[in-house]
Length: 229
Image 1 (tube, rainbow, N blue to C red):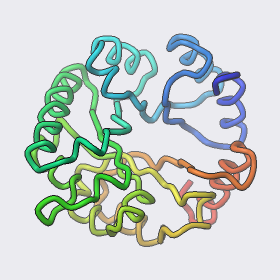
Image 2 (image 1 turned 60 degrees about the vertical axis):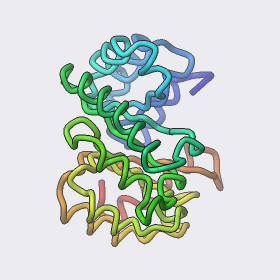
Image 3 (image 1 turned 30 degrees about the vertical axis):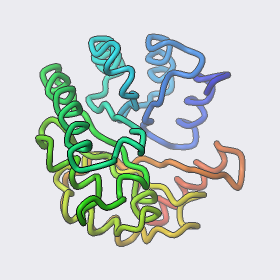
């Protein structure tokens, strides 16, 4: 992506994916990325935007999301050291809620993407529970990364049952290629689909047994075997 955004997304489309979730624009700007994605006939399911970018220029984030034709803006990370108490997490939630309200006024949906740290317990509840409890559902949705939920020592299915109405995006991750790691995906799919709120399944990978593009091809083949394409 850093070397050749357009060539990479063209290959992703050739493999058979209908959409991508963005985390920056590689060697292009937003307009160049829009053109490359249009040429590849790829939809943008969402875009990861760090909290620093939201704080620095929210209007730019809104403009780029609209340019790219997505309604989902996702905060991909928060420094775990800041999850020091319930009050600290509620303060984070208040900031995300405020950004979510502004994005909503522009027709966009803010979500928060978890790692393992959001499942450390504060007063007996996971950080992510506190984060969602202290924000309005219409202002803050969840992009649940089921691998990191499990690595955090929590049940992905329980979290989905508890908060599934707020889960608009699901990161399908199994550390390496799908089906080779610890996540029980049939149970994840059954839980997500029984709730019916999720709009996108998003393939993401931490480690590769092959080149990245070959790995994402193998992930798509596994999704086909599971009947999820």
